[in-house]
Length: 134
Ligand SMILES: [Zn+2]
Image (tube, rainbow, N blue to C red; front, top):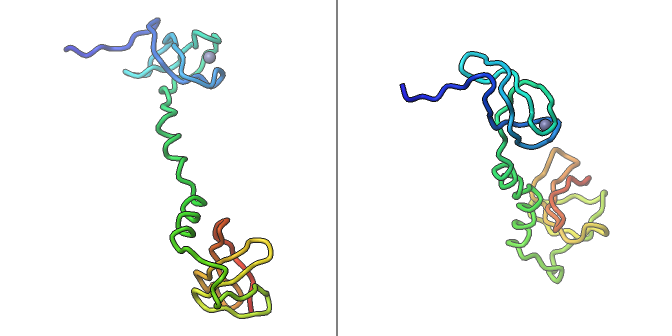
């Protein structure tokens, strides 16, 4: 058996909730073949062993926000306010799918979805918004 087994008093890298980072811990007790209770060598806090975290991976996952996707979609549409089809947005108007509208706050938008009878989903440069309509 070449396998290295953990033993109490040994050192192991783990996540410390007090230090909020991966630190070296001394193993106090074992739960089977896994570390049970450990003591942080930085802050001396004793706690249940937590495996070290890998912050880089989670950071990558967070770079693509839904809003960025909306903006890419918006850019790909290349809408122009010069278009003769642009209507000024009003709650009392009714809109069809793919209608171009101009909102006083959000600017130019395109109707992407008709939600029920009085709501539309509009893609603005700022992202998707649900708007009232007739
Ligand atoms: Zn600590």
